[in-house]
Image (tube, rainbow, N blue to C red; front, side, top):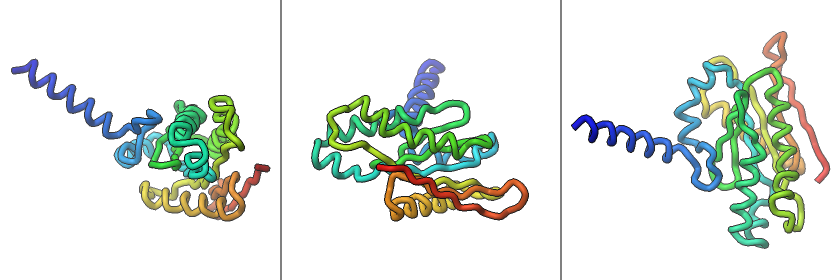
Length: 188
């Protein structure tokens, strides 16, 4: 009886982990970040980056879905998760990084800039570089995932509207609650 209960518990844990993992990239998914967000915030993860690949549909249309899948896997590798960076795939070509530390925005930007390099080394036959746009926002107070995601996603779409292959971020000033908007543009 105990052995059956232990086996059922192990199977339930495995199924829960599978339900929180993207099968293509191996990254955690939206269900995982929503479930982990409160604990990660308590652990100091206060910056959220929303990343969307630029013109991804054309990769699938021109090269096929197998190449598109390889690109998504390469992008997941570009995120180099670690103690201060958690990566998630929300779906399609949209990813989220949850970061901590004073250099969180820089950590996110380095990962966004690594995407064309990592993808090109994985699939050198693509006609053009694979780039990404990104929105980065810091949390305010006890703000939840949905509100933070909404603000970072808005910044992502501002970056896309401004020409893609760039980052829009809001950074809290150290001295007060003033918000500074930064834009970084990089040549395509």
